Amino acid sequence: MLKAVPEPRSVFLTGGTGYMGRRLAAALLSRGHVVRALVRRGSERKLPPGCPTVIGDALNHKTYAARIAAADTFVHLVGVAHPGPAKAALFRSVDLASVREALAAATVARVRHFVYVSVAQPAPIMKAYLAARAEAEVLIRVSSLNATILRPWYVLGPGHWWPALLLPLYWALGALPSTRDGARRLGLVTLRQMITGLVAAVESPSAGVRVLGVPEIRKRALA
Image: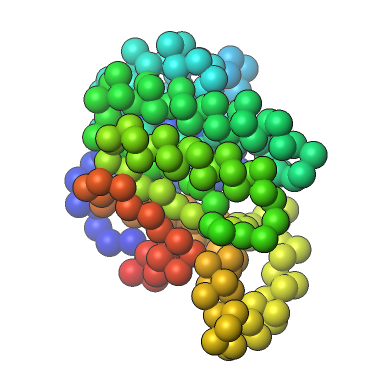
């Protein structure tokens, strides 16, 4: 549940043709925000109607930085699809490298608020993925940009439902004092909760760097 729009935002979105990006663009547009999305040539039709495109390369900020000057918010969703151990090198050459370029572009454009989807930390698996996202968070902190970092663990949604089978285990671990914190930090969130959390982050910019873990993401979906 989202409150009335406090103030329309001008949003520049990377990763807008992806799993979360398409839905986020549509949600922001439906609430009256202006959204422009960075896309590779040929991917324009993957965006919802009413979302202008900026053709460029997420791994080279010089190809798009000049086109984001009117935006007050930068949402960065670029990342390797279906992350797994075999993609460790890509986490640095795509995920981390794109964050570095996005921050450079946002700084040049004097964007006031940077929104980034990271991952729950610490966690017992996916070390290379976590390391790249953790390093990205460090880059955000040293950039001096106001930023909101969201840290989901696994996002349930179309084509991504199998972890729902683990919900009874989560409930059991959440009931034990020794495992409660880990179960909450590494809990599952739904795609709807993530989109609601991202929209709320856009509409309520932070001063400094704000980190939203799984409990906070869920809370914003209920607010």
